[in-house]
Length: 389
Ligand SMILES: [Mg+2]
Image 1 (cartoon, rainbow, N blue to C red):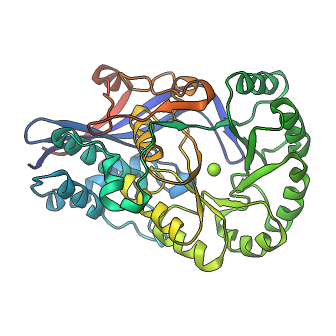
Image 2: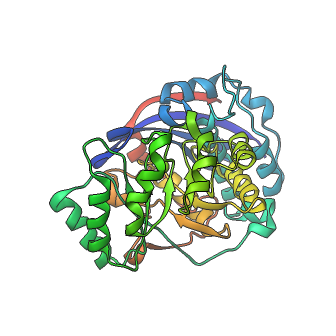
């Protein structure tokens, strides 16, 4: 069974409100959707969220990269799901100049890979969760439901109080707070947030590269009284090596996000000793399979993992994240499925928004186990580019 058609869509999805953190603000998101059709007309969808400040990709560069990659040559007849997964793992996009970290095509690769494993998954009636068992049985730990954490980005004043009250009423267990935003007093804010959320909620912070290496120890010291359980990407990626020394001076776990986009990044982090945790995000890391491999690598070296998400994921990446979170063992935090809370359009026929407590059920499949609404996709498509067929 072969792939006979492949199409890339540039879609623009509106958000419900402005989302702001230390390095960016947005009201809409430009995503890449890939549709893959097999010989028997089974169709699958994939998604990538290119972010220039994460992997250097833009929506245009990712579509262009797919267009100049030798994809048909890599597509072969697949007689079972195992072969399809092997094909998906071997997928290689064309080289991008100056891509020393091996991440410059990750959002594009993610969209392509998910579309392929979704299409074959539907045909062979296998869920993409089964990929975890196929690749790394030791990491496979299926669970009936997933608990998501929530986030406080730039809310302040009454909005911040209302968000905190909503989280308590909703019985959210973990909250991530964005810090390092210009004009905000983080310590004062964390004190208020801790008071509003109460003692039992797990609070962690994400600085999105905002701090200078020489100020990190003091910054974390100011936030420690409010029991933060981890600090995500305190310094810019270019200065990530300074985190090895910083870790010797603090006892709050450090998580890499912008500095963790590829297997090379992961090896670098282990060799230099720059972190305690990886933030794994499917689009950033090149798809479901490379992210499973990163989780496997992390476990081997005693590094904890968070499954993160990108702001603006549609139902496609939400579903892929759900499969990952409900089948990969040992995730310390899980983010995603904000769907209705965040998006005006999720492209899905199903609603994956997490419910009370942040809980959401595992998805059965086949494939991603959700259906893309073709009408909705048409409405938000800016550009459609045939890649094959
Ligand atoms: Mg982050």
